[in-house]
Image (cartoon, rainbow, N blue to C red; front, side, top):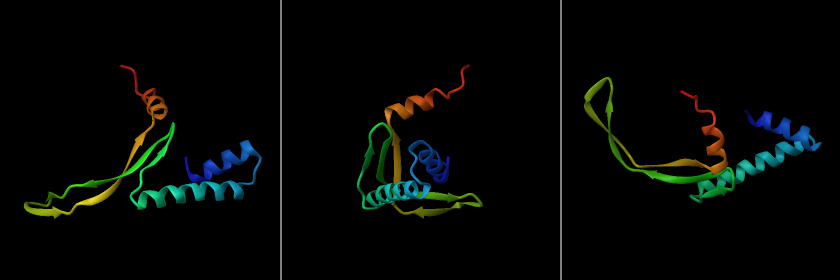
Length: 97
């Protein structure tokens, strides 16, 4: 699903214009990404949690010349932890054996 698909579906359900819905969706995403960029945790009940984690520095290997060590510096990454309802819905997609 794309942002466009989301806007079209919400507009069809609410009767509001796609332009109004796009503004709301874009503002929502801007506020979420802005908060995460400032290092805040964003918790959306029944959906999930976005948070910033710091990866430790480590030594990597170049696959073309494995004898060379490549230092990889520490970096901040965004982690997403799905909420209980989403996690349970996705688990239903697991194929039966």
